[in-house]
Image 1 (cartoon, helix red, strand yellow):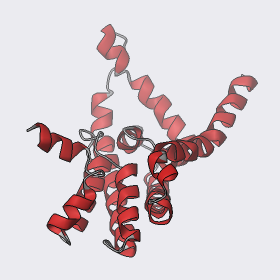
Image 2 (cartoon, rainbow, N blue to C red; image 1 turned 90 degrees about the horizontal axis):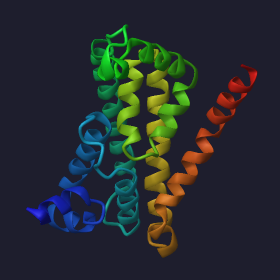
Image 3 (cartoon, helix red, strand yellow; image 1 turned 45 degrees about the vertical axis):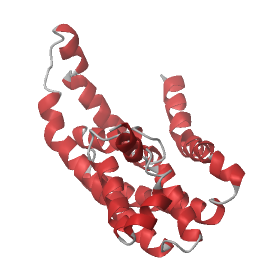
Length: 214
């Protein structure tokens, strides 16, 4: 049982083993994992960045097709976020229904929080959706919150597609180009963190500017 859990939670580390054992079915497995991690809020701990990186690194050895990986996983990422957004849009207003502060739960699920989230996502939602792709766990919750906050659907679709393309191309591409370079392979999480920091700087400056003006 412990071995099965390890395989499930560390699929990136065992990807070569799965390719050797299951061959072409690995493409379906990769699609399913990326879709579930981005589309189902109850599975935020599945590997994302590292799995894309590992798939790109294997593709560099000729074991997998990098073109097919990129197309399939961009599709999975777009579909996953779309489902998550739809669930949030349907469930959010029902969950965040309280207007009066009556106890801790009502404070936590107060409708005012949802209204503030809506204002945030209308102003900064695009950057949040795109940069959130590079943060484990966060990328699972951002589309749900965007839906719950009623972020404009057309705006979400645009940034969902943009974010999915950037995320998959950067992570899988980095694996394809540098996946077999030890220093990059061992520190890919730091590379992803650097990408996030650079991408959220505009939001940070905008929020700081707004706070100073108040």
